[in-house]
Amino acid sequence: DGGITQSPKYLFRKEGQNVTLSCEQNLNHDAMYWYRQDPGQGLRLIYYSQIVNDFQKGDIAEGYSVSREKKESFPLTVTSAQKNPTAFYLCASSTELSGANVLTFGAGSRLTVL
Amino acid sequence: GQNIDQPTEMTATEGAIVQINCTYQTSGFNGLFWYQQHAGEAPTFLSYNVLDGLEEKGRFSSFLSRSKGYSYLLLKELQMKDSASYLCAVTDSNYQLIWGAGTKLIIKP
Image (cartoon, rainbow over all chains, first blue to last red; front, side, top):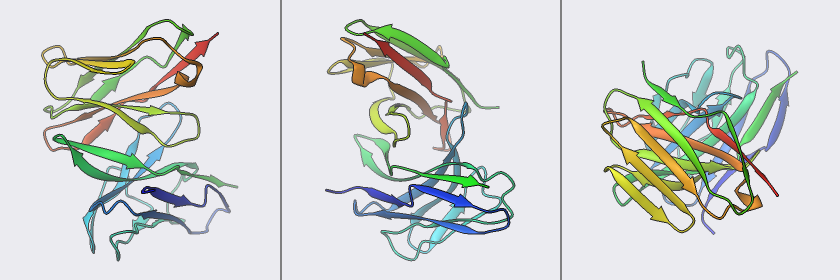
């Protein structure tokens, strides 16, 4: 079955540590995204990539970094510069369906800073 | 600024009908999406509206009025598994997705 795999599902980090969240897709989608979800707020875009070796900052890119060396993979690093990293992180990829750019999401990674 | 408004929480009874509203103020409009998200899980695509009117898909329907900046998601014959958050998202003139905070729907027996 095609889909998006995120790992780990739960992650704990001490302040000052960098952590990397994995996102792998086998849907053959060109575009991939990272969102952050906080209680009471809409999804906020961190980074997105429309093609291999290219990515763009979203609305809240500060304190985060990404790479897109392979079409299937779009890892997100949460650096120590991110002031409030505790959140639910969602990776997504997209394809066009009847004129709509429909997102398929991974199951998410919940990061907690201790 | 750009804004999507949805009720925070709604409660309905199993077997009944519920309507979840979404109003938006965005710079341009290129389509509106509804996604369903069960607690702790990934959002899944429900519907897409770009023209005014009603789109029906089984027990779920979605309506759009572009002149009013308004959409609703209608869920019929509610089942316990419909307990979830429902996210409204609008694509603006730059094709950026703007997300509402979601409506948590609680279904009671």
